Length: 152
Image (cartoon, rainbow, N blue to C red; front, side):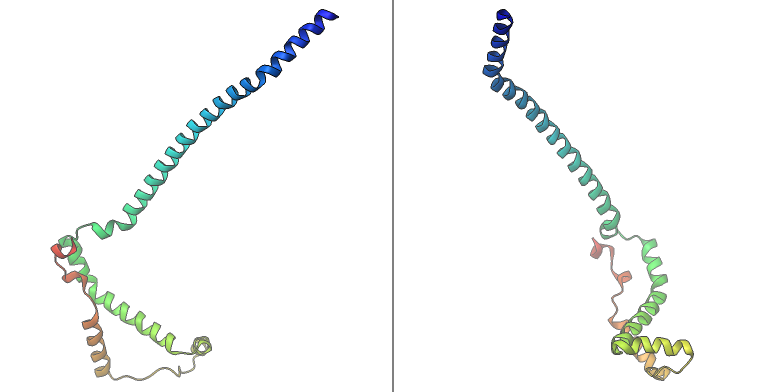
């Protein structure tokens, strides 16, 4: 019918003329809400990352700025001789491995497992060994000797 066609035509014209305004209004609302969400998410992520990083730094680096007390210094002094011995043994082992050619290290390990003599083994007198250890101890930095004012 004609009246129905006129109503449809009126509605279609209204939609055509108002569509850009309605779209702009709806999209502006959505974009503004997304910007608010983005800002909120950014703040949450930043706060979470900063907190996690700060906790991690406090845990891993707290030794650097903690003051060393008398008990810690006494414990270091008590452990120093054993730590020096371990350090010397590890240094000697690394030096021996570095001195061997690449294939010889594996062959030496294999021959030691079988029970054969190690070709790299050199008999060193106790006097030479003591002199070497004394020289290495002199070159070692003892952190237990530092005063509290030097650590801060």
